Amino acid sequence: MGSRFSFLSLLRHGAGKAWDRQWRDAQPKSAYDTIIIGAGGHGLATAYYLAKEHGIRDIAVLDKGWLGGGNTGRNTTIIRSNYLWDESAALYEHALKLWEGLSAELNYNVMYSPRGVMMLAHTHHDVQVFQRHVYANRLQGIDNEWLTPQQAKRICPPLDISPTVRYPVLGAALQRRGGIARHDAVAWGYARGASALGVDIIQNCAVTGIDRAPTGEVTGVQTEKGPIAARRIGVVTAGHTSVVMAMAGLRMPLESFPLQALVSEPVKPVMPCVVMSNTVHAYISQSDKGELVIGAGTDVYPSYSQTGGLHISVETLQAICELFPSFRRLRMLRNWGGIVDTTPDRSPIIGLTPVPGLFVNCGWGTGGFKATPGSGHVFAATIAKGEPDPLAAPFSLHRFITGRLIDEAAAAAVAH
Image (cartoon, rainbow, N blue to C red; front, side, top):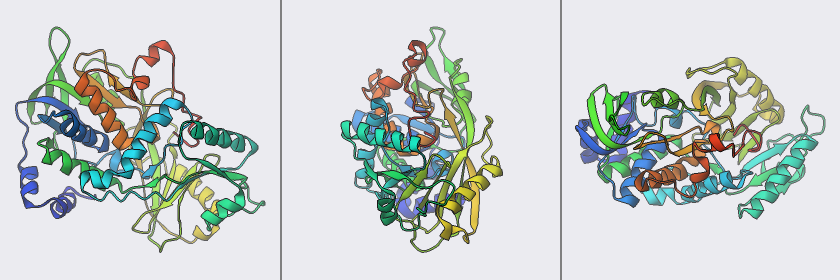
């Protein structure tokens, strides 16, 4: 995804000449039934499910860059549903079930790999927290199991479980159905599926304003390619939601931060699962190309930078080298920062807004990629019906008025 040219070349390879011609020649019409702002995984999934399951096909998906060029292309691709609170667990489990059949659904290989997600416990407190997760998930009908250090070592041989390290491994929680997928393939699969159903996907078309009638409801958007009328607008712009919503006169309870990540040089298969550690704040898996994909933390200050602070990556590498001593000789290829928007309770916002016809899907923090199919599915239902989908209802803006928050800030095992 290094350039628009190479990206479109890959689309041509996978989608066929006819679809590519339609893609390159696509220009916005003067009016649509529905506009989705943001052509990332969530926005494209929303458009796909609106067209496929709700029969709404007069849709334009607008993006200021190229599809999948934001956080969809800048994440560590981890998929899991072992969240603590019932509302979060239900939403992410819905997404995980969709992941399991997504390649067949889209007729496009998204390379979903259920290799397992292991969360390490390094302190007595960690042990208590993760065992609580295991029990809660079992009550929710979600797979999760507790491992001894020796069992964790058998599943992940590179892991150092010696008692002399700074943060010894005291146990681990394992969700075997968790894993990874290929991030750009998810965007391409949903884009191709939505386009085949008649959705227009307009790249390089930044939205500069949201139009409202004197009575308050939305009437369309202003873009770099001219005005476009619409009676419904869905905003799915990870990291930039506050900026877009301000165009409609709304302030959002969000902050945006760069989230650090990096990858190593490619090596032969060595990492059989995903390993996460909250105490040292690092997580690692291996891509199908052989790179070790390493996730770090967010910068301590709000920013829209896609680079962020190198010191966070350095600290994460120190932790990774302690957990996996055999990786110390590997060289890092690149690091980056994906922009995430977070709410005070570190749970998403999905649903209606005070502006009639305007819907929002945001605030996923570091949990956005794993939620992609489930997020698009419930957001599409919310837009189509004009009322919250049952799985999305707990995540409405109204919770910031009532104070009934879904506080996954410290409950989600690592980051979010």
